[in-house]
Image 1 (cartoon, rainbow, N blue to C red):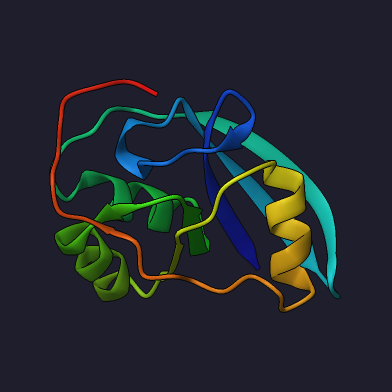
Image 2 (cartoon, rainbow, N blue to C red):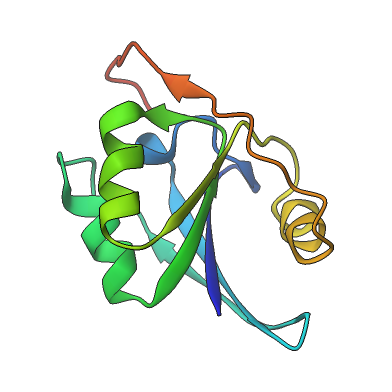
Amino acid sequence: MKVAVAVSDNQVAQHFGFCQLFRIYTIDNGKVVSKEDIANPGHKPGFLPVFLNNHGVEVIIAGGMGGSAVDLFNENKIEVIIGISGDTDTAINNYIAGKLVSTGSVCHEHTMHKE
């Protein structure tokens, strides 16, 4: 299984679309077997869910994202976990342990910024 974490400055990015990169963890038998950083190709409406789906991602972890993005991820069969902050490795370990709970932190305002 592959889980992507939106990353800015080695922390879970607070807005997935403006993150610096996506850290894709491959999990097998409850353990991280590899991780790969992929640069964010840019925030274009509807693009990132398809992009991550094409990389085999089944779960996206981020601080927040817009409601339409959540819908697009769900349409691409990618589980969305939002409202997460802190270190990316801690977040993925909490996910594996079943301790990561989405708060449903949907962004209602979008500003053009970089984290």
